Each structure stands twice: as structure tokens, then as C-alpha cells.
Image (cartoon, rainbow, N blue to C red):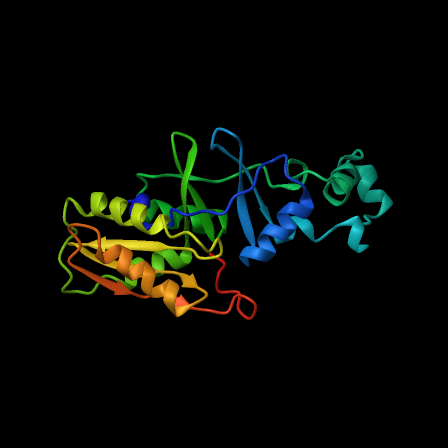
Length: 233
């Protein structure tokens, strides 16, 4: 099993030249706490999260450091604080040092990076371009899909997963849903959140219609996005 088998392929992203207001609105609408910042070529150039937007002049929450700390830092910290609280563009407030994993990374490598960096989610890249994201929830889903008597994954499971992902992607009517698909020996497990029972059933029907699928286990939950934070990865 590789990172590409574990990841969520549908990732909500934002461009570096988008505004801070755009980022806040997008996170609220999608009920997520952070998202990758991706340039026009698909390369991950940063991560923006709720924490990057807490110290804002609009809210009156900008940071006020003591004069001596500013003096010791040579003025660097006050300048950085000013940018963080006053800048209008995502590129200026995002975290630019992004930790990613290659699509062929093993689960052990993914977990090691998460533990070392103390992060909850990892962008997955292919030659630098974003192809998905792995969260702790993805790892738990993979664990839940495997029992002691579960046989090893079939060689063509990855190709089948790609076909199921393509079929499900055509039903992307709800930007807040996060699909996670696991395929083992032709059996498809669907994970994620939608806002209605009919959407949940439609995703199952789409997966069942893919040639080669033996069965579909629908673990998708119906959640009211206005009342739950479950959409976040």
C-alpha cells in the first residue's frame, strides 16, 4: 500500500494571489481548518490554516510584542507580525515551508513524517504537483478496512480505484464532500460526508456501475454542514 492508495484525491485548494477574505470564506463554506496553496502549474507552494488568520487587524487581534523582543530580533519579528495581520494576499500570510510526501511513499513513511513534523495532514505530490492529501482519518479508514483474514490487495486494485474515482468525480455537486476510496480485491469502500441521503446513494450507484467492482461498502455519512465540523480532513 502506498500514499496514493490512502489519500483523498479531491482536495480543496486556493491560489497564492487569492485574498485572505477568499481563504476565510472558502474554509467556512467547506468547513475545513486549512488547505494547500497551489500555483497555476499545480505545485504546492504553501499551506493556509485558521491559525494563519487569527492575528488580524480587522478583528483587532494583531500581535503586540514587547519593545525589547523587537529590538533583540532586529525588527524582524514586528515586521513579520505586521505582514501577517495586514496583508491581503494568501501568499503573504500562508505557511510557505510545506511538508509533502510522494505518491509512492509507504504508510510507515507517512506516519513518520506526521509524527516528526507534528502535523495532521500531508499533501501528496507527483513530481511536485498536488494529487491528493492524507490525513490521520485516511490512515484510520485503511486500518478499519483490514481484518486479520483480509487477503492481500489484488494487483489491479489501483487501476480499479482510479476508475471508481473518475466515476465519483463526475458527481462532484457538493464541494464540501471529501471522498476517500479504498479498494481491496475488487471490493470498494466509500468514505466521506455528504448533505443528503440521495447524494450518498448516488455515489454508491456510481461505484457499483464501474466494471470490475465486486461489491461496494458505503461508509459515507450524511451530515448537516451547518451543525458539524466533520467535513474537515
